[in-house]
Image 1 (tube, rainbow, N blue to C red):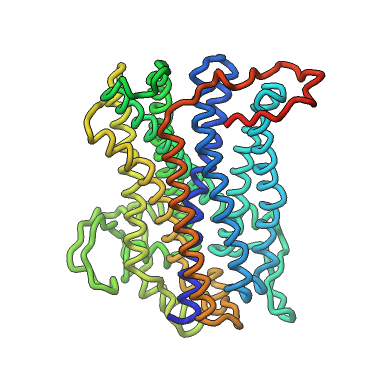
Image 2: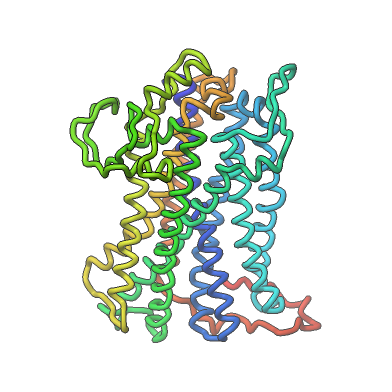
Length: 482
């Protein structure tokens, strides 16, 4: 492979692995904040134990996720310096805002939350986890603003003398129509991940407790009731997130058709313009995706997804290719059709299956019931993986479907690679980062399983939270609650 292929593989691998941690952090921060809020209101030990249990999982994910995210910044300078030079003035603005504002809120206030148990007034302590949660939303918004510029560049002008794009309207960048539909879609998908983790862990403990009551959380008889509550919260979160993903995805599809019609055509492998256009649920085609051999189609559905009308016209790849050649010059302007076609469908399938499992969990645990079938454990193991995979597939579709553009209509991907980078140096860093990320992913899973297995913590050892700070509190050691 040449430098371009290697650089794209490296960016793809590191970005997808890093994005495993992002939806987990966003959703779990809010779920933990909700649990602590309920504890503050009810003073029920059950909610305090749930807060500390899932708070520990949040901290593990946040710590490992920060490490994986550091590489993303370096990649722009190492492998994509021409991209950074050309659009850095615009692309870098929301990223700088994310680092200086959003990440600052997350890192500072999660630290106060960790060490503040028993040392600061309870309402202020509760506020720290809520600020952390909203910080994750701000982080996502600014990062998606940068990515949305790559999908639909706005708020800039080309400085011909300097040969670069320069920012002219930050408000246009922060209100990009692509951003306004992508942000809710991403956040709803993130909550499916967090809800799936909570429901899966709770189901595992419930089934274990029902099958082996003498082994399940000895000395903690209230665990089953607490985990039942957590299960239902997680399952409902998955379902609500799934509905939000479907509704926001419908809006996103129409905006995508408006600004990137080739991506929508590639998502269906639609080569010829059709009105109305069907949506294929499953297709067996040639290896290059240029011809369907067998297909199961839903009439008119693609027209609705793309235009909002069941009689809408959807432009095909061939017609769009001719338009782009006339506008941008000779070249192949279609993405990898099999990749875009199948990632689009697999993304939808993963989310749908997660919703079905969550719905089954609510049914299986109704009126005090606890399933003991091995399938309950298998479903619990699969549940968090499904929305996590759906998130990753969604990003692959988004980025691969934009090809061959790095910034759509403005900068081809091939022109963004660092001119001094060689295939050898990229391959070495690709191998190193792949090994590093594989190790971090193993560590992440290992720590999550290790700390989720024992069950809810004993809160008797946690110092009481004072209503008012003690006068001699400055001389007391910090209480690390985990």
